[in-house]
Length: 211
Figure 1 (tube, one colour):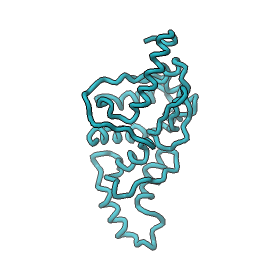
Figure 2 (figure 1 turned 45 degrees about the horizontal axis):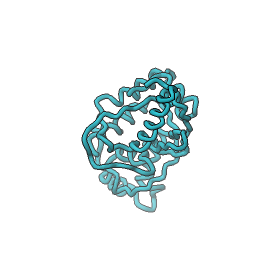
Figure 3 (figure 1 turned 90 degrees about the vertical axis):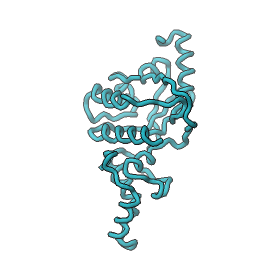
Figure 4 (figure 1 turned 180 degrees about the vertical axis):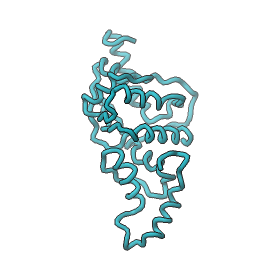
């Protein structure tokens, strides 16, 4: 039901739901039922929608909307360039701290005063399918990790690994980035990336980490 090619328009399903259940018999709206089933049951968090059902294209888009950052910084497409993404171990060696974020939006990652705050994520069997469909959907519409990175995020309470093996989690996230292109500055974490880049460049000059 969350495979992108299987999606039906949300308004069609909502219309059928409204026909099947009169207003007086509905315990909650179709939007809230969908969030409870597809979002809360898959990822811990009591997410309340800040968007009307008319903005939802389908179930995959619903999950995307629920996990967008609180504040977006999306620019018009510019010249394509490669974006170097450092892994968690390299950032930790640059004296950067990791904190379990309070937000229940997966993409609500913030950085301030040397602390990278990342929302809590539980990785289990359905995580791969969820993230792949979200990535493919965003690539249509709108760097590498290691086992040490997984262990580091687990130690800081950011990641719960229900797959058991750190290498399995590493493979999951590394495979998500295959054939995925980041267009210039047009991505959610551009500002955070630029701040971290400055921190890393300073650390490299001081000899804290290897370039």
